[in-house]
Image (cartoon, rainbow, N blue to C red; front, top):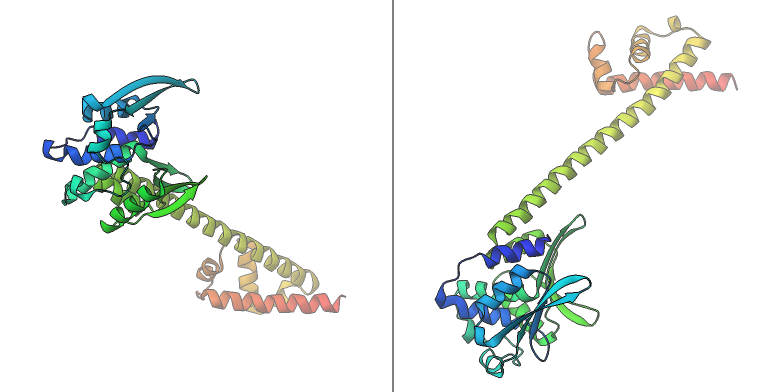
Length: 290
């Protein structure tokens, strides 16, 4: 089951006080489309919830076969309903909603039930309201942003829609319309993604450090072996001979750890300085030998 259906099922199970149901019904109807208003879905539970919440005398639900799947079409065929809910009025009638946050939340819940989708994917998060009408989208855009929630307006295939790709904005909208569990799920998924991302960055960083250490160590060992071959280890001073022997015995060890093995201990920069002197000596020997 999709995340969208999870959200709509959660909304369908929320209690709605009788005095707020008109705001919810208005939102449901606002998300309908077409000259003869309809709502089409593959999700049976959402379709039957809408049929149950809307006035029975106005609504007809039919089942149909769509792409080898059962679809559910909810039609509003009553002219009385079109007039009552001002279907052909494109801007939102605030007087039908009421001014409280609860009523506005229920109106937006209804709009989401009939025109909303939300996706959680590897690429990120996406919530949208698809109303197929510029004026309706503009009016809904203003209402949502007036509540302090951020949403964007765009077009796809010539049709307008509102959307957000920000997980915090999506969580705020879901919370506002009553889908608290789904909002928490969004934030939990975000936290898990961030933890995994941090782990991957840490692993990648550690891998890069190991690769640099191995590469540097290989060059140091090459220089040391050349010096031992050409002039012998006894020609090196005590400090360079000590670090050279430590490197040959510990090819994968970091400079810091090599310094801790030296007697007395020396800093990482001190170890690096000794290897720089060894490298210069090796380079001079290479030049002498063509």
